[in-house]
Length: 497
Image (cartoon, rainbow, N blue to C red; front, side, top):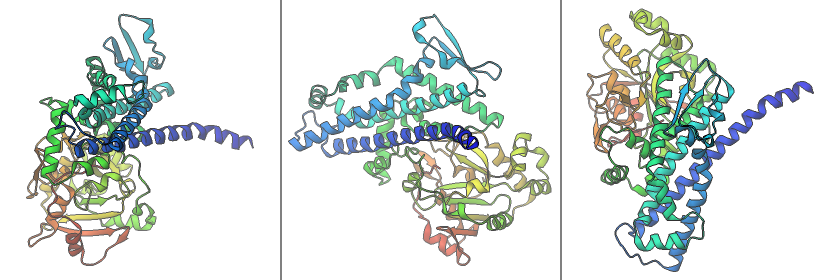
């Protein structure tokens, strides 16, 4: 009985933490769905184009209900950001330390000092919890900024509706207050400081080969998939409103309706807002160990892996069939035989020795993953060059793939940039001699997973499909014909996992 009580005591914090994560994700999901409704309503009634908008009583009531619900959800989500906002005040310096106990969680801004130096130790319990709080708070703040821009700004800029919603919503938080908070220079400066601090934390971990927790990766991915995060990281610092309007225009050119994009919870096509929660496990996670071992034995260094995960909401917004691309490294023995093992950094050697076989660009950055981790999918396609390349080519390609590890995910989706990388860009970078069908989308040259698969079909295919699983089942014959039926040759947009 005592042992059972001890087990329950140990499991209780994990259960509470899981419930907190699910609750937060549910709140974000509701907000994203609501802002989709608000945007669609504004578009349907041309609120952006007319100073005086005529609405029926039912339409006015619908608009008020949307506003009230938005304010309610904002008030539920805002405390996550407010909890950690004082840590990023202009007079606060927040630093990481492995040798000093965390004290940042004890910070009381009411003491009114000229300046503060606070410590977060990622190895003690208080520091680990604070890092989670910071990641969640930043994600909440960025999503709220996006949501105001998408759902509220059209109404705030309309004089008649601004007055109506300011004085007739029946809520203590008015539209005017929302606008004041959104345009606050102090709030924006704290947001920028927090974003830079979290970026530096994740950069340092990648450089040192330190894995972040799944929760932190999820929160960071949510932050990175917002319009605000993208705008803060653009070299030309385009205004967020201009960024939004530009993306809307480009999406319409691609015949992707803004309404559909928003309804799936995407920041105008960038990244995934609610895909952090998956509805189930991938069908290939249930493969017997013997089949996984056989699959691994069939793979060769520099094989290109494509997958599909229809149980994630992200997958529904990715044009075409496949949603992710990765490159197979091979084992230590294979890399030694290739003559490049000693050229691989020790931190990557350790990952390969512990089962890492795949280089892939996830939303948390480019990493080395195991096959077991990768197989949380329904569909798998493995492509291999038809003509076996010479050893020099193979060596360069493997080292190029490893050189991408540690880079951040490229939420600008531009294959011509080098500091960050999107999943399907891996193939473009690792195999530079192949005639990849890159296309222009969202103002940048991009390559999608289906673009990669296009080199395996047609009259003169360059890649051969060597392994194919469809809906969890291995396909043994007519692989090329099956791939041809699955992929969309007109795909031009991007993908995230």
